[in-house]
Image 1 (spheres, rainbow, N blue to C red):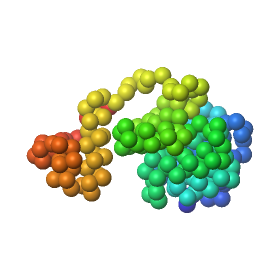
Image 2: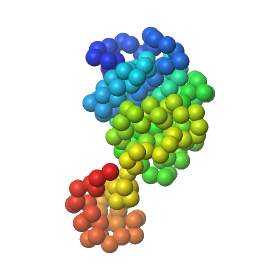
Image 3: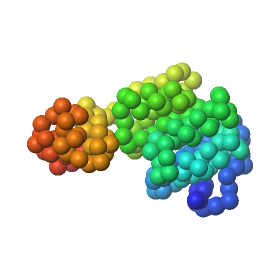
Image 4: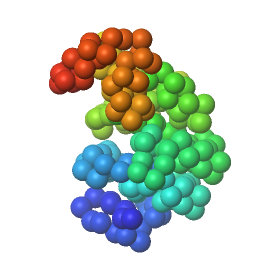
Length: 193
C-alpha cells in the first residue's frame, strides 16, 4: 500500500501535517485518478493523504480523523462504505463525499445513510468535489454539465450487468428487457455525459 501526496509517494505517511481544519482523506484504488485528484485538491489548500484501500482508509480514519474525505464506493479490498462508517465513528462532523462509477439510487441512499453528505459519479473533477465538500447545505448546487439521461440509463445497465457476473440473459431478465435489445445496448459505446 502506498500513500501519495503531491509529487511524492510516501509509504509511511498516514497522518496530516498541515492545517487540521483542511485535512482531507482520498480513498480510491484507481491510482491515476487518485493522484490527479489529490494534487488538484492540494492546490486548493487541502492537506491531503491519498490511499488505495479500505484497510488503509480505515486506519487513517481511526488514527488521524480528517475533517474531509472523498471515498470511492467500490475498492479492490471491499466497500468504501466501511471507510465512511469508520470516519463517522472517529469524527461525526466530517464531511464525506462518495464517488463511484456505478451510480444508482440504491447506492446513493446507502452512502447517505452511512454518513456521506454527497454522492458524485466518476470521473468527478476537483471543482465538483471541492464544492460538495465545502457546501454548508445538504447538497451543493446542480452541476454545470450533469450526466445525460442516456448516460444514467447506460450506467445503470452496466452496473446490473456487472452484478449479474456479465451474464446477458440474467441481466435482461432482471431489467425486464429483451436479451437482443440488451446485447445491442452493451455493444455500443457509452453515451457522452
